[in-house]
Picture 1 (cartoon, helix red, strand yellow):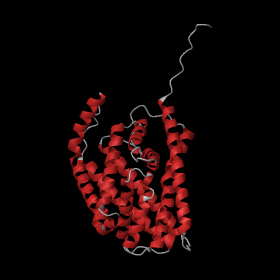
Picture 2 (spheres, helix red, strand yellow):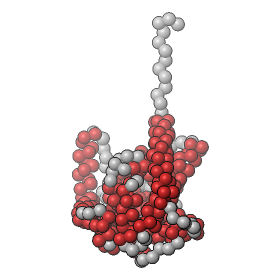
Picture 3 (cartoon, helix red, strand yellow):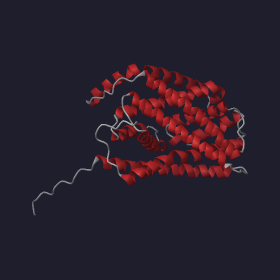
Amino acid sequence: MPGSIAPPSPPVSRRALLRLAQVVVAALVLWYVGRALARAWQDYQANALDLHVAWGPVLASGLVFLGTYAVLIETWRAVVRQWGERLSFLDAARIWTVSSLTRYLPGKLWQIPLMGRMAQQRGVSPIAAAGAAVIGTVVNIAAGFVVALALAPSLLEAARPGAARAGLALAIVGVLGLVALPWVLPHLLRLAARVIRRPLDVGALPMRAIVVALAGNLVAWFLYGWAFRLFALGIVGQAPGRLVDWVAAWAISYVIGYIVLILPAGVGAREGALYTVLPAAGLAVPSQAIVIAVASRLWLTILEIVPGLVFLASGALRRREPIVGPPKHPR
């Protein structure tokens, strides 16, 4: 009728917006990963030796890598539990792996708010989930520098001049900050609550959460090093040196790649560090080092993105309703 007012269209649900955001993130990640893999494959073909890949050690390294992810997921879940929140391992794995896809976007800081938002969909406090992610990230980097400094400080310096001193400073600041966190966090939450005018009280953070995070991340670093050694054995047919040397080499390359925020997933920085560190530690000659560095990027990228994409696909197929009541406590 002329002059009548059309009824307003229904608002877009938060669930639909979250799905759209996940699709956009997945598309961006695939684009960045595709570029990185194409570049890495070109480098691999340009530098590959006459290799005969032994798939047994390579597949074993993949299993250890995935086992490392399981340790990190359970560590994050355990820290969340210290705040009185509960997540099943399957839900925690979905949140952790899907949010980890954002590592391949520039900035590397998208994962933490996404973890909080996804945890909220499962009935968990987003403050507890994001806070546990922050603790895990800080502990992971601090533990990586501690491992590198404890096992091979000269290699850290060889990877990048000044890195040993910077790593020591970051490790000290990180450890002191973590020790002070249970006392500082309540004040930070009260300040944030005043700014946004919303309550943010999730209870006190026990020191046990810091201990749990540190223990889990130290175990993860040694598993990463073991997986890296198995991968090198499968790619070039030999992996000389001690296991701790491989642990140190991987820790050095990873933390250097992580602190270069502008590079998605540390692409380039991590490989450059490995190319320097492996020959310096006597673990590989330069021609082998570049093949190991580039091939490990290809292999690790696949292992990092496939679990998250599988969870995204399964969630799209099932289209489960978000939990709005109190979460079920896993047995």
